[in-house]
Image 1 (cartoon, rainbow, N blue to C red):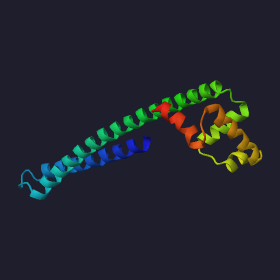
Image 2: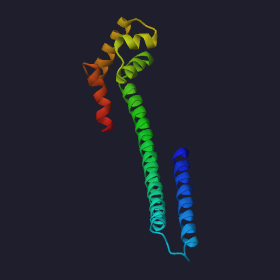
Image 3: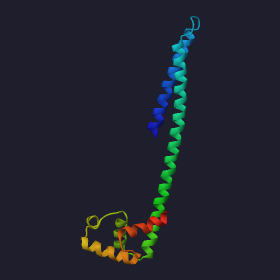
Image 4: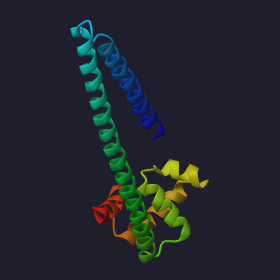
Amino acid sequence: MIAAFAIVALQAVAAIFFLVDSIDEIILQLGTGIDVPVVLECLVAIALIAGVVMGARHTRKLMAEARRREGALAIARGALAEILKSRFAEWQLSAGESEVALFAIKGCSVSEIAILRNTAAGTVRSQLSHIYTKAGVTSQSMLTSIFLDELL
């Protein structure tokens, strides 16, 4: 964010320098007749400043939109956490089953869950079977869809 503002500020300084230089040349040529390229330089400098202003406004809008989306994502994360906690309690999952269910919802395979929990794959399969029964589903994707449906 700071880098974007620094770049816009640097562009503004360069455009203003270019404009001042062009105006200075026009002032120096007032008595001798104004050269067309100098006038064009001045117009280009004005266009650069307009571009910097428009770019700064657009950057500010993009930053505001990014902050809004980050806020919405944080709310969704919090909502999902609350939904998970509520459902796990409703299904009366044990602490271990809750952990396995969370890994399954995140998309981990049985072997990955076993490694993460430092348990045997058979233990994870057994826990998943209990979780599916308590949740009234038959697969990992169905378990995940319960929570996606609630968020949507």
